[in-house]
Image 1 (cartoon, rainbow, N blue to C red):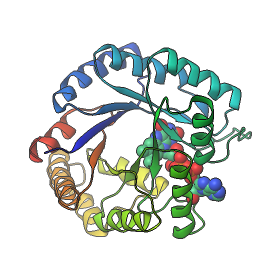
Image 2 (cartoon, rainbow, N blue to C red):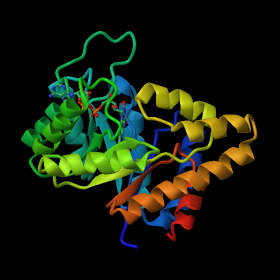
Image 3 (spheres, rainbow, N blue to C red):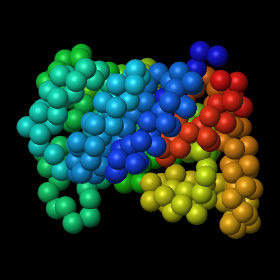
Image 4 (cartoon, rainbow, N blue to C red):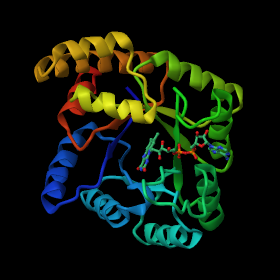
Length: 275
Ligand code: FAD
């Protein structure tokens, strides 16, 4: 299977967390992902930890990409960080707007991710491979699906090379989004983001906030398991495997796993997918 995989982590907060992440990276490396990526806290709150985590992964011999969100940032600050990325040999960035942390009033000098992409290109030319976010179920703040799609195209027109979607459990939404983007002339790969399901209550809370729908039939079934972690895990693996199989059958160019810094679910999903 020539499907490209990528795997996302968040930067650990402690030395112990970093130690665990090293072991997780080593386990997931057997999947030979195209790259690992590391999230970036809202308003730059994890700037150094994101960079340290990327460098740890790179030092272990893997390709690693920092996420970079621009809300609350200045051009000078982003420019400095791009310089550091360059010095450290980083060649891929996941470029995002991010969300303004509560209590932070100053949105900074960038309003949207397309402005960040344009800035990276104007400062550094083709040095970086730029990934951007995409929303098959539409971004929660979008004025309309059409506007959101046009805003997605803006990021690609500004110079993005590829896109990773928000996670979803409804393959129709992804297929519709890709069709609509292609109809607008967007040709870059649109890689589905896959969220393995470990804890349903947590997932439900997070999904409400980020606008990802959990279909009623899935929600009702997970709710019926209550605290039964084993049934949750088994059903979660089944539905996510089926989702991935369908996406692959319909031509998805790759899969991006939101690993939540855990190896086992991603490994099991990939095993079931024949990886
Ligand atoms: P944008 O593309 O800027 O879109 C945000 C909203 O503004 C949308 O509603 C869009 O329709 C609208 N919009 C966009 N451009 C314009 C324009 N020019 N004019 C008017 N309206 C416009 N968050 C983090 O804080 N750290 C992370 O590491 C992180 N990683 C992520 C990884 C992936 C793959 C994804 C999909 C999301 C990630 N997020 C992360 C979450 C992301 O930051 C939020 O979803 C955020 O609200 C939007 O970011 P964006 O880059 O998609 O924004």
